[in-house]
Amino acid sequence: MINFIKCHGSGNDFILIDEIANSYTFSEEERRQLSVLLCDRKNGVGSDGILFVMKSDVAEARMRMFNSDGTEAEMCGNGLRCVARHIIQSDGRASIHIETEKAVLAVEQVEPIYKGIDTFSVDIEPVSFEVETLPMNYEKAEAMDVEIPGLSHDFTFTALSVPNPHIVTIVDEVVQQDLIDIGEKANNSPSVFPKGVNVSFVQILGKNKIFVQTFERGVGLTNACGTAMSASTLVSTILGPNDLETPIVVINKGGLVNCVVEKADRRYKIQLRGNATNVYSASIDVNISTSEWNWIETETHHSEIDKYEKLKEYASSQI
Ligand SMILES: N[C@@H](CCC[C@H](N)C(=O)O)C(=O)O
Image 1: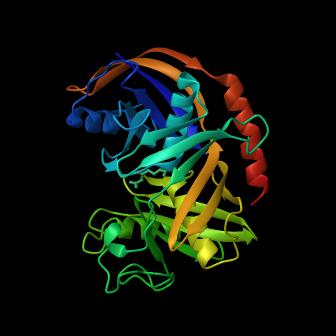
Image 2 (image 1 turned 60 degrees about the horizontal axis):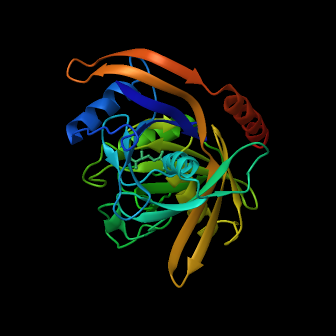
């Protein structure tokens, strides 16, 4: 039997499995198989990924994030807010640390970004523009606002890791089919992106206000991607009209978040602030070896869902 919480950050939805509270001990292969089985939107529970909450020797907890195709990501910004909420609400402290694959990150509960929405802030770092950190094979050490050979002649991209890999382009209008085409091409170009890449289109809506949509590595088109919105805020601060140290409103298909970019010496740090909404809690019976599973029990969190709908309505009125 597996207990989990179905949650989302900006409509980027996850199955959160607390391995500590439930004393689960999955093998690496089981985590991969569970992700493919349960994230499937047709025959599974349906989600963009699984968040495994594990013990940490250096922080209050450790987060591991698996995409719906079973690959593991270095980081997940929307997922980290959901894990932050989960640990903060059981721990009782409003400000803690969570270990991720590349860094131990500060997370905290902050002022609501919209009325009635419990809001969590997570640090997104380390940030690097060196192409080898994605990794990306390119003729120069950095790829800043350039055409990427083989991808498209119509768009210029900036490559960065936060620390998962991203390429970001600023467009006049987001054309979803272009994003899908480029996302698929980039993720089928191992000679350029040996570990794949998240691809984002950014539309500048005004000063300190952007719209972002992302084709995620290991998933495809999602409602929102937290690390992508952070990377897009940084790129549109360097190349566009956004201010440093100011909450940038980032509208997405699933709602909105705020991102704040800080610069110290030549290093950037981004804070991502937004919802972490629990949709339902569930128990399922799973046989990983036969890929069979059944619902045992679910409890829907109606009032959270209703409050989030209001934020979503407001966000879509802002595009
Ligand atoms: N949606 C996530 C990122 C999930 C991982 C990504 N698909 C990758 O493989 O890097 C977020 O909110 O950051």
